[in-house]
Image (cartoon, rainbow, N blue to C red; front, side):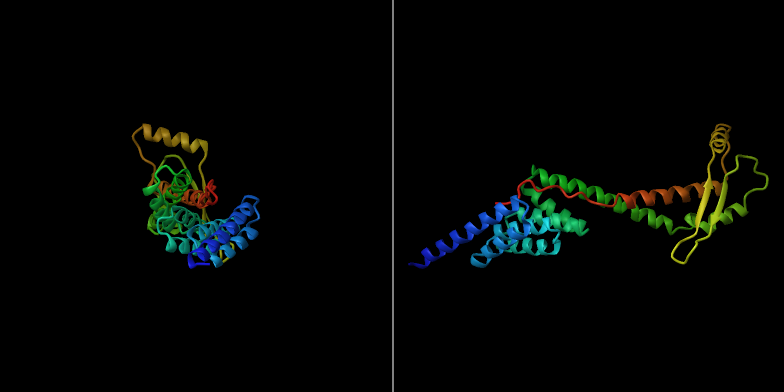
Length: 241
């Protein structure tokens, strides 16, 4: 038997194991699929085998292992786009959004109509924009006009001659060292109606009121964006090769 014949037999044996791995992957038997892909890799390392094992690891939420497999696949074949996509999915799952977007962009540069990658990129851009917004809010939060003590101090300086609508603001001390002080702002319907009329008459509300409202609005926005800080990983419709 020639060397070429031996190589052909090894390739056939490895491909047969890959097929078995694919069958187990379709049945959601991910650990069994990994076993077959691993045996195929041991016989004949191949970019497809590594990439398919990466997919099985993603399904098991073994994201670090999936990234390692994707890296090995890319090392063997830098043009194999599925490996980049699967690495992008794994990166997004461990909150490495920029790295994930880099891989997604690489795939889309060569396969611009790939639905899975387009969906992933859309989610990544959304979350990165949210993070930028949150960072901007945090930077604003460091400025004096968003500090509770400054809001309360502005109330102590409120013009005694002010006759407009009243905005009741109360400082709520933290109950423990782990918590922070808070502000309770009572914005009633009467206050809103009076404020609107004040604007219509060409007057302004006091700076203290503006600071209190901005502080509370900032606080509510921060809570909203933190709840939204997640990525929905698109399903990979092309599970294997």
